[in-house]
Amino acid sequence: MTSEPPRITAYPDGPLLVRGDVDLRDVDGNAIEKRRRTVALCRCGLSTIKPFCDGTHKPAGFRTED
Image 1: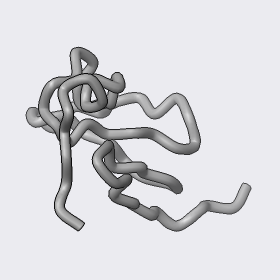
Image 2: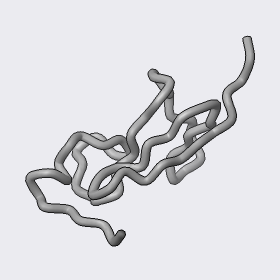
Image 3: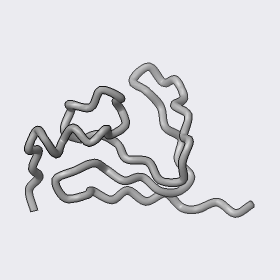
């Protein structure tokens, strides 16, 4: 099995999309299970499933700078 290099893409007005082989950890250093090849990480701070995005940024009107 080949490893895919990590890539992080800031989605306009939305989450950070993380692709590739990454080791996700919480604030205490505990491993967070990655269940998909691509994960969306919250950047609006309002998600109920942090660190993952749950789409709350849309109704909240979260906006990023260009």
